[in-house]
Length: 334
Image (cartoon, rainbow, N blue to C red; front, side, top):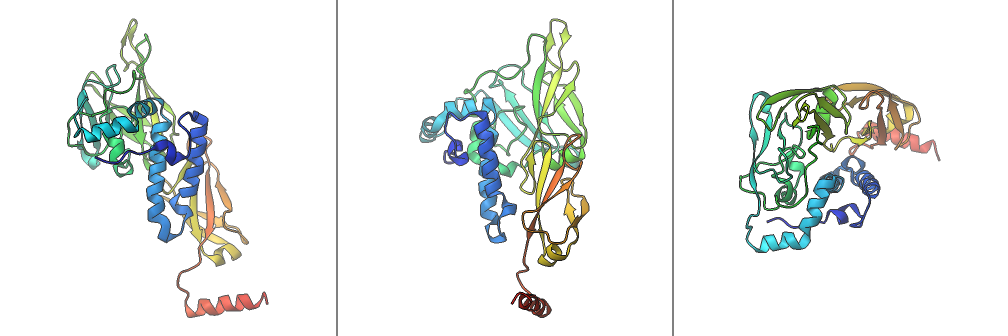
């Protein structure tokens, strides 16, 4: 049984923090502990802290997850641990691979812990399962259709499946919702994913390149039965955190290393984009660490931009010729 995680403490906010407070704290902490903002010997440590921060935000920024987390509480979680893991859940979860390209399949079977029909998620690797801790999985691992994320499970009921309220299942008109989690590369490239509806029907969902976090995809007539026929299904897009890029709305931020002579003299450098392509940018002469270069239209959505932040990186080992040149440069200041 993993240790209880205090998500409020991780983000540095109180239990009564507003959504705005949580978002502000997340941005501050993510900026502080982003691996690319630290030297190589600190990256592994910062990566783990970065994962904790993203996990905390994943829970506290979502009203349903936050309500469940608060209801479980430290005491309830510890009592469960001391009780040897007796289950109070109402279903089981499974996770595996199927189909071409290693498509990931996550499904919740049995009663939906949030009420309503629920929606199964059948995606194409729209998350990095290692980014979520065992503690997260023990509470939320059986919540199929909730965010489409999960680790491999040994099956069995979710011990905390009884917590929480009703799902966001649409009104009297039969409209319903499902969450689709994509990694940044998928969102940037665009493509197709499969959704398994409550009635067992499989449908393909096409999403455009550079789709933004929070975007909604409307699938007409694929919701729940309503008084005037079937309602619509609204698929909410959520983009999973990425250790190499930072999202701020539709804008993308990336930190790159440049050599001191490139900063001083200027030059062209290659920048790896979210879809793994390379784009050449021009670094102006006299650039300093922290300078941001704007790549217009390279963000998400129709008007998102990408900002490349320069970090001057001195070589760890200098050649004899490089030492001579640096020495000459130093002498010019004396």
